Image (cartoon, rainbow, N blue to C red):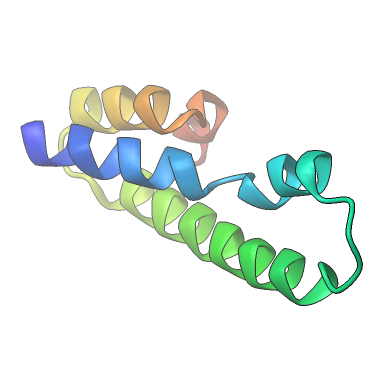
Length: 77
């Protein structure tokens, strides 16, 4: 369970990083970095959805979904 919480914290940082980046970016040449962060965010969301659906223990899935910041996805189980 502790490992899931650590993974959730790591994924939460990656999810939506491209939105946070655009708030800070003001110089030219940021498009490549934005696309890189967006791809990474999409992969993190995909992994989080997969884990939420595949965890055998529903309580762990609910806890993970809340920790990762995607509590609504528990309903796709």
